[in-house]
Image 1 (cartoon, helix red, strand yellow):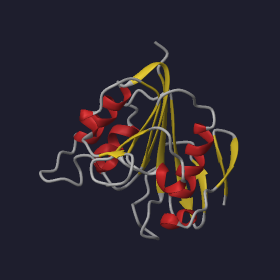
Image 2 (cartoon, rainbow, N blue to C red; image 1 turned 90 degrees about the horizontal axis):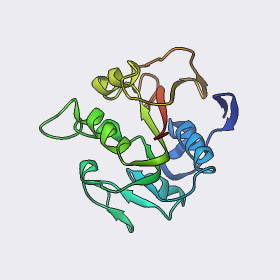
Image 3 (cartoon, rainbow, N blue to C red; image 1 turned 90 degrees about the vertical axis):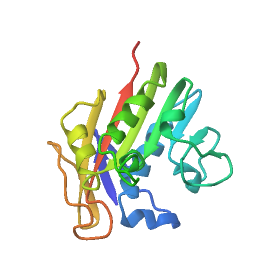
Length: 189
């Protein structure tokens, strides 16, 4: 699977864990690993994803997944300052997959994580669209402060970056996301 993200030609990430090439992880992880190639300094990952693909050596916080090197705490309990932050398919679950449900918690979590960026720091967040409609609306209205953002949509086995923000129903033709939002931030302060 080949696709283009902001003019860069990338190859879909193919790994047996989570059958990545068949779902949104194909583009999320390809973009994330390409982005991580230019990062340095202290890093934070919100949601334990990259460790499944042998990317380690940074702080990982995941409330529910128990694994070596993973801190089990709420996103809202994270403190510190980070040169880079990444979150792959995680923030849409905050407050949405919990009881009682809080539709605004994901947007608050995004704002909190963004506040942890060191001066000159960078952040990348991926969100499968169509899963959490309140968070989708927050992301698509541009009320997130990202330096740049994009959506990618699936058509069969191929993905393309759209000119306008686009949400496809989650699991419409497969049991996975049909559209993904990618946001990037730079703390220029």
